[in-house]
Length: 286
Image (tube, helix red, strand yellow):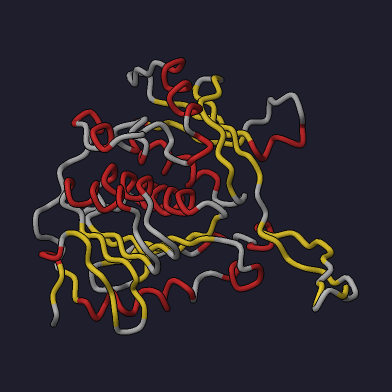
């Protein structure tokens, strides 16, 4: 089984130090340094054409880009992506680390103008152009339907996931400012955890890592540190992930989408309690 080894990644790139002044009972305290999660824009370009800007925490940018292309069904599979790299031909040299140049296989046909309009139209809310359940479930998304009952997952394994996820959130431990997403096997084995200021970005980084590693996702679990939104649910469905578990609540639209797609959605995974909103047939009590 492939596991994430971080490849020497320095998590110090994910936060910055600033001075802050606390006020207690209306009185200012001396200023002290504080660590904040870093947030910067990243522009995606296909054939030199900007298609989207993602507000993200720098780090694992290739994973984020690859995962975004897959989870938004811009490409049908990872094999359609030829290269992803930071762009070195930008007007502002300081922006080199924040522009990703994507080259797709020559037989991949995209209407870049239409794609750009759709993605930019809702980039502020994170829905990334798919604003309806009908669009999220459209056959054109190019994914195999989720298996009806597989994988089978013991509830005991789900109870253990929040602690395993938290153990791999070093920047959250320093700043309290990042979300996390983790990919696990059906037996609870951790494969990869990624942090980001945007929860949907953390999910895309996990998806991108799995694609680069050549992993099938039909028997894997996605664990997220916060709530489950519509966009996270649609991303899981797009790449064939059958189960999402979360520490916090789902949105009503996320539950509706999960039920229609046959995805298992488990939320409020805390201590010995959890709540199942969809797909209970995949869970076992043993």
